[in-house]
Length: 71
Image (cartoon, rainbow, N blue to C red; front, top):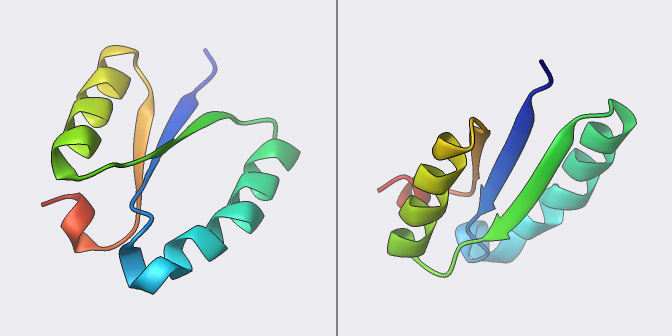
């Protein structure tokens, strides 16, 4: 069984620096052949809904951003 990841990104985290960390992380996931998708959270309610949907699809949820994303 392959594992698929849902990366839920808070674009405002660390004054936008969370987005700067994303390209190298995505490159590493691609090099390892890891299936993934990226969601730019539009706010905490959106992030929660996307996380719940990802769990429903048996995806591993990865929060990319600060503690405000996991509120």
